[in-house]
Length: 532
Image (cartoon, rainbow, N blue to C red; front, side):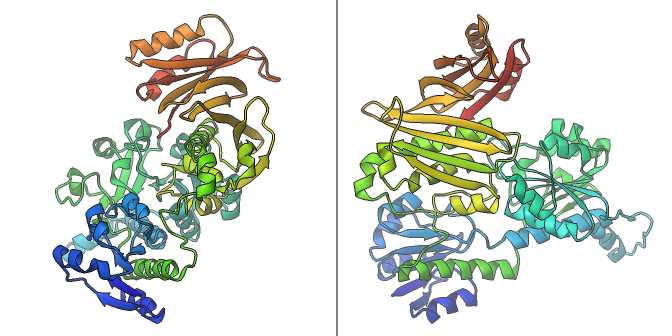
């Protein structure tokens, strides 16, 4: 078989391909036109970020069976087009986690000891020992927001300096914190209140955009030092600048920015700000590791072995597609709902129960779909149908799947329960009608029947007259149109006199609207969910 290495990936990756018996060509200097002419001759291709494998180019790749991306993302590959043609697309998602964690530590030490500033002064002829006196890391509290692979590696390294580690990530099991000797915070506010240094390792999503803003800085300890080796949009630059001006923030170390490349950022002029040009993944080892890991996946794909980092997977078997296919969107929605209702505590276990006729099939794809919904947008790496189980395992989240061939009241049901210590949040759903629309049947201990839509909000409140009208009035005042609503208020042991309302809307429900309603009399809780 023939493999094309289109971009430089490191000698170890190329050698691995040759050792596996493949005919390897290096096309790092090929033009787009030459690639289009010759790609049909290859069974696999290895790329980095410069090569665009769009649908048109893939259509010419008539022999292609595998794409190896030597890096974390696959934005430059048309994955749906590749999947349609039966081409496996794999990346190297763990290639830069050590590098990013080490760069975080480098910036942490540089920030604590004023290393770049002192170096700059000395090479300019100024000996300024007193001016650049720093602080020790020992006995300081390092706050970590986002406790995935990179956050956990940072914690382990910071512990060797004698730091106390306080982390927040509701999508990491409590046992994982205990295994690593890290204190689990119940909220980001709890981290703000105690952190001397704060590092963010969150994914970039609409919810995390601007996570560190003026309100967040106001909750932090005076003189806190901020680090960002994750994603630029996590911080509101103007608010950080204001916090530095006021002295609320004592310093910052930034490797990423909202717009890149950039050389004229206002924060670059601050003497207590350390900056680097997005070097978090830039080491020779990470580059070599990415190429080697991508080559491993290509070898696996061409030899028929398991491709562990594939971002696409074969479709469900034909004989199961008619039965299970309609339940995949439902399971993603239920996973998203269960994890949202469980937010505020660590998720230790996710239970998936398939009842009815679907229990007679291989329901593993439904369990994976639940994980996709539960983890989507909540991890620093992109979650897909291949890596979702391993990401859950790394975060200490146990996944339990069961089947029952009997389903009460409905032909088929899916129950999803998010377990946090002794707390359990269960949601139940099914599909109905000729178009197999997903319907929610249970949440927060109450039953109803409501077709799920992209945007919805749930409220728990005291069962008194007028509550539906109060929600409608508030939503109307904020320009939110309610598409459908349902209420459950059957007596539940321990929750006597409480009811649950769920509404679907034609636009996202802002947190400020939820806060306004929950602050009112008789409301106990409110959650908004985007089922995208």
